[in-house]
Image 1: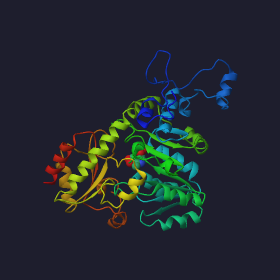
Image 2: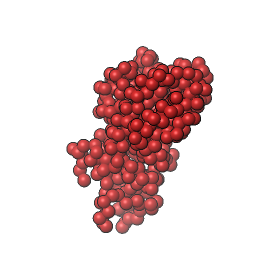
Image 3: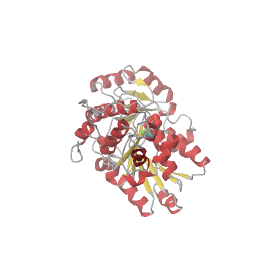
Image 4: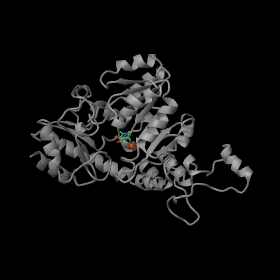
Length: 389
Ligand code: PLP
């Protein structure tokens, strides 16, 4: 079905879906690893790219995976998308393909992305540079040195810093560099970086796209031209999504808009309630008018997301006591699922850093990061209040 002019909620359900001969309303799961041809000439047409077709599942040339990729591309208004077995697999393929001249990472990023950029890619001879979100001057310096890819998350994890996608993309493009945004925290419902000038969007589909904390997957969206060179890396790294997970992910994406809109509304209600709590020193949420990133967030986001970070009054032990008393929020890493989760960055994402490094990154001992699920807002606030009490 042509859904190009349809709204996102419609595209989430209908984009990419293939009709089968039995009238299944959704794309079936093709678990086969290979596909047969009527003749060698037909096989060569697919192998040599003259005709689209199914060939071998690790290549991604599988009907279920292709259907998912059409849906993923549609979510971000992209020409093309590749689906991976994890968010990290998507990042690795992107960095190895388009990051070889050097990668600049702006602001905070997920711990795994940071480890990859700070330790592993430099071991392969790929230069990486780090710029603090509030010191964007450094960006020009590294672009002048020839770095070819700028990578960042917005909002960032866990400080919820908001980076200006259009402004950073303009600067990077002036130097001929490409821009990749990890849009995991915002989700395609709240933010579409390609519309704002970015060249790639990366998702840990494990989070909002999957939405139920029951699958691991990743996605890379962009132009057909830029994604073409990523394809052989995914193929030979062997990090293509499986048809079973592709189907499960398509199932989840069908309800993405209702889930995220509800999470946006609940997070805002929780953030406002926490702002008034005497035990809370600060609430980091892009939807709060008093938050430093609110202006840029209002300009580039359609909703403010389901993630927020509390700074409680007290020290590390006090924050641990609060988290340990929570009953409805589970103490768990990850985010974007239907169940609400709470973590302290010092015990998870930023555990390995020294106190000085943490301070540099704006991470405090009393920070509690919340991923808001689909529970009732009043129940979540009551849980936080009893834990803070
Ligand atoms: N990007 C962000 C913002 C994340 O939070 C994560 C995982 O937590 C990743 C990327 C990596 O995704 P995955 O765990 O699916 O490999």
